[in-house]
Length: 362
Image 1 (tube, rainbow, N blue to C red):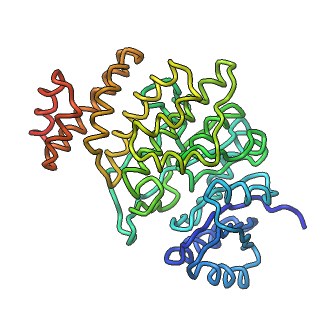
Image 2 (image 1 turned 60 degrees about the horizontal axis):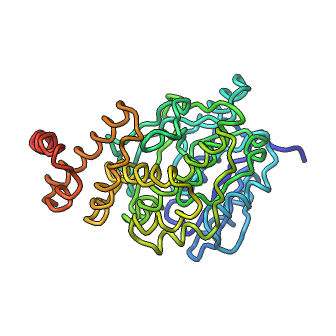
Image 3 (image 1 turned 90 degrees about the vertical axis):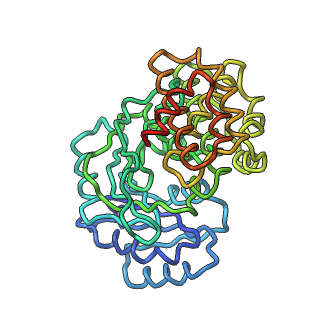
């Protein structure tokens, strides 16, 4: 049997409530020469039965079962079974519009210099209601691993289509804590260009149980993991040895709990300059995440971030303005929420006039 034009890779864990709609949106694509590879990562709900029903009625749906090992392990397990020239990622709680795969395939066919393509989306909540005001994907080609926080080559992970050969060439997914997608994109940049299409090609569900949105602890893990991936990219660009991620890093960071302790977990693998960079970059990344995720920083975060601002001399003048915006914006929001202690702990005295103005203006 010849390989399909596209392999759609969907990792699944206990997704019974949204699975049918997600798979149906892929089965209803305007391009039919696809295989829908679903990796069941040890689900304990009704997911296995739903997948069996889909496989029975649509030959393109193939189900792979494995013991629970997390998303990186599930993605690499599925990637090893892919045979198509193109691999499209998707999640079991999202809904793709019918033209999604066709539009992305046409782009990659017409632009052989590109290794991957993403798109814009419509954001929805757990019940499927629209959410407005969330960040939109920009140009991945404006990435900069040495900005604070790193300007990541961001593509919405469940809506990316990639050349399989490029993904294999860079080693597939690595266990960058809560940041396996951006870590992959930094490496794919070294194989070809990345691009975000302006079209909204599906619905992307934002909910409290997502990996990065479930708690402030997961937000801290993502802040550290994403900036480690950027430092890793900076190392490669300068000809240095890559950062060594361990499969146990995410659990170790989560157990550490606070931002200061998380950074100590990985400090031994960084030089002195990288460690200062990580403290500041992870701090501002956490503020960025708190801007649109369902959590707020705590006093311990504010204390650490305030101290990390001493490393701002490493940033360009433009970047320092960006850092100041995040600090004053977060402090003002905390004041409006009645969290005065966190706000005053975070903002240095020189920032307070701007914080007060932002708080009053809303």
